[in-house]
Amino acid sequence: MNADKLSKIVALCRRRGFIFGGSEIYGGLSSVWDYGPLGARLKKRIKDIWWDTYVEKREDIVGLDSSIIMKDQVFQASGHLQGFADWLVDCPGCKRRFRMDKLEKAGQDCFKCPECSHQIDTKKNKPRQFNLMLKTNMSATEDEPYYAYLRPETAQGIFVNFSNVLNTVHKSLPLGIAQIGKAFRNEVTTGNFVFRMKEFEQMEIEYFVHPSEANKFYKYWVKERFDFYVNKIGLKKKSLRLREHEKEELAHYAKSCTDIEFNFPFGWSELEGIANRGNFDLTEHAKVSRKDLSFYDNVKKEKFTPFVIEPSAGVDRTLFAVISDAYCEEEVKGKLRTVLKIKPQLAPYCVAVFPLLRNRPELVQLAKNIFCDINNSVPAVYNDTGAIGKLYRRQDEIGTPFCITIDVDSLGDGKVTVRDRDTMQQDRVSRSKVLEFIRAKVKGGH
Ligand code: ATP
Image (cartoon, rainbow, N blue to C red; front, side, top):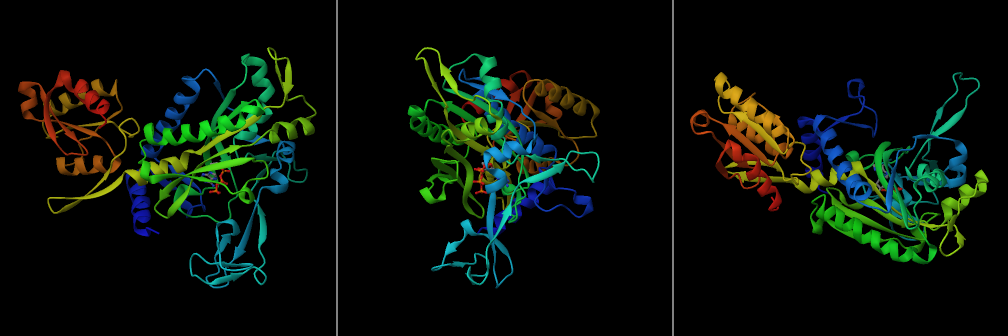
């Protein structure tokens, strides 16, 4: 494990305001994290790109925003109340607790502890099952509780609204219903920063198809989602790989599943899962709710329960992957430079604007005017709280692709200095051409 890289990323996220510990002033809350000013921006960019790609730009997918709190029957039907549990086992050596499905086998009934390499004999250390559902009391009184559940995936909100959507959008199959939202799991094995949280955010599409086309669309989505991470999010191809699940590894509802894995600082782990869920969910909800959740094809005069292909992505894991992939340390003139080489479309700010001298009111005024102009078109930040070297370092660390400096000459010739984050090259550009200059660089694959 690259523990050093992980701790550097956690420290940078804390220091620069990407991610803070949840309830931190009270000592923190295990596996709960808060996004600071920059983290909130980066997270929103990721969600916007996803939503724009799949909901705004496509005819065959519509959006949904269903509630987090759902009735117990939903999760009885989906099988989560009975089966959504992890088998956990304690290591007798280091006393830490692990998920059985993540351990390496070391013989019949024996596993190897990933922390201390001790043998864990499951005959002696009996694994125990922990349900991951978080429940909440919706009654005003404690003595007559009424329990509902926080959804463990956004998907169930889509399934229970399937006929509502179908009856209102007047579309045929294939039809996707997409949703971005919070999900909650009482994860027992925690750690690894925002990789495994108790409250996290998902971006899910349930893509309903005719059963005969399920395999075709399953393959389509695996490729589409892999390409999305490379082309839209800017992750390096070599940091990603596909892993198809073995039959015994499949969730109870899935016919097939492929994970898109990312090479996190602690190793290859799931970034997204793409599953062919068959018609399990609609069939079970139809049984329990006694509603008709089938689809009637008017042209073919055929009635059937659609199969569903589900690309299920985590916003937090994507953000973590973006920061981890972009994190670089370079030596510049004998000094270490830390820089986040994030794609400009994703960076919390695309441009930072500074006056070279903060004690010259006319420079400050000009810089502020230029900042306002630019911020109308691309996300920008103004800063005059330090010497230029310090300001550049700060922007490098938060991944701002361009810095614009206004100096005394700018007052006379109307030109400003544009510094490129990655090459550190500086260009003098006239104020009226600055946006054009930056846009050309972004387009040219900055
Ligand atoms: P894992 O095996 O890592 O627990 P999973 O297979 O249970 O993941 P899914 O149920 O497929 O995860 O959820 C879809 C996506 O939601 C995951 O690929 C991940 O990006 C995200 N996700 C799931 N659980 C968490 C969590 N506890 N914290 C952050 N993101 C999560």
